[in-house]
Length: 246
Image (cartoon, rainbow, N blue to C red; front, side):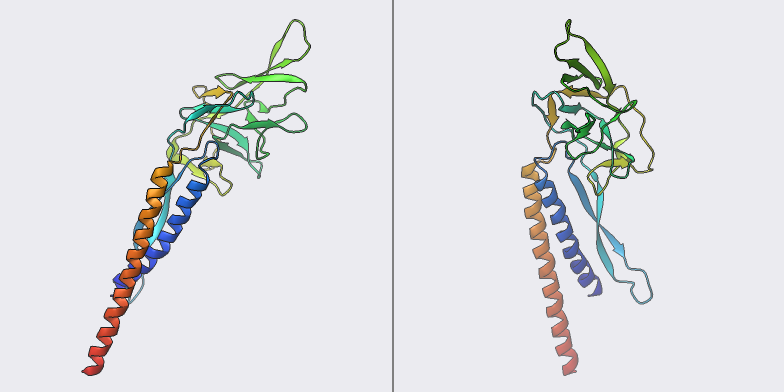
């Protein structure tokens, strides 16, 4: 009876947590470069004297789904999408390097290349500052070029190069800020093999249909655990009646 109650009780609690995960994935269907979160269940025996039969269900965040999203052309010069494996390096709120697939870039008032969230984009030589009154383009290798208006003949100058990295997916962990970092805390080295597409953005890799089916399945699992708890309560009540009669 103990095993039944603990398994059903903790299972129902963890199903609610997984529903929140699926809901978060669905909420980020329109988020550029978003990687869906993947969770799983595992059983954990409760250690201690007198509790050999009690087992609880634990929800684990296994990893993020690293499959690529579709690339959509925007025509905006500061938009960039990583094609295939790889990441853009940015400076997190704590000043340390982090990684993202969100290539919707913009300029700060001082001309520094940033993400829409205000995080400074890391270049191979540090932050990239773009000149005023210039048109920009981002090459396949991450090279940022500028063409100053009014110059004759037209002179294209390279102002920097995006730092593109490609750590092993198993070593990447998502932080509370949505950015990824290496699990060992090390800074990833630039990888010249990473390719980007200028004037485009990568869509979220969340599959809406699969997420909705998953949500329905979790709802049914929650109802099943509630039924198990009701049956356990009914069995306990009947056992109490039998014991009182004897």
